[in-house]
Length: 210
Image 1 (cartoon, rainbow, N blue to C red):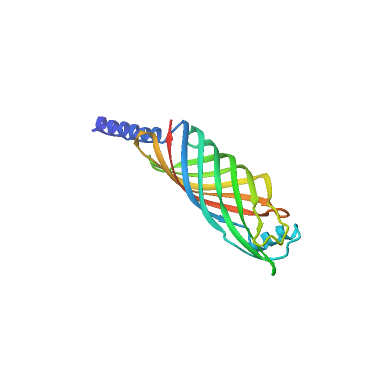
Image 2 (cartoon, rainbow, N blue to C red):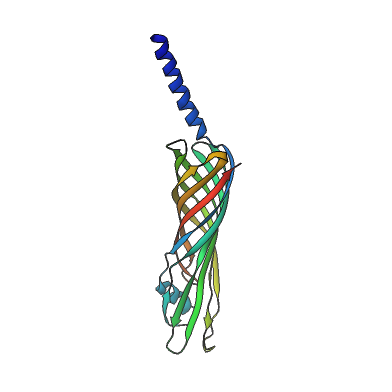
C-alpha cells in the first residue's frame, strides 16, 4: 500500500510538472491582429485644431473604426515577455460647418510600441496577460474646403506616450496561438494642431511560437 501511495504521489507530481512545462513558451513569437478602435477625441477637439488655422466651425466626428497590426516578441519564461508592435489605429471622418463653407477631413493615427508583458498561465492552454510600455504615435488631421473659400491645410503630430493593456491567449498544438486583447494609447495627437486624446484598441489575433 505504501509503495502504491508513493507511486501515485510521484505520478501526480510528474503530471503537474509536465503541465507547468507545457505553458513555458520560451522563445520568439510573432502574430497578426484585426480589431476595432474607439477614439477619445471629441468634435470640440477638432473645432479647436481648426480654430488655430482661423477656421471657426461646428464639427461632427466619427469616433470608431477598424484597426490592424503586426507584433513580434521574445518570451523569457512562462511569466514574462517583451514585445515590439506596429498598429494602424484607424481613420476617423469629420465634417465642420463654418456657415459659409464645409471643411471635410479625417483624423488618422498609427503607433510603433515596445512593451513588457506579465503573463499568468492558469491552465496548460489558457493565459492572461497585462501589458505596459511606450508607444510612438503619429497623428494626422486632413482638411479640405468643399468650396475653396477657406484657406485650410492638414496638420500632423508625433509623440511618445504611455501604452497599457490586457488580454487572454489560448495555445494550440504546434506552437500556434490566438488572443483577445485590449490596448490603450494615451495622449495621441496634439491639442493645438490635430486634436488630442486616447485611443482604445480591441483586437482578435493569431500567432506562432518559433
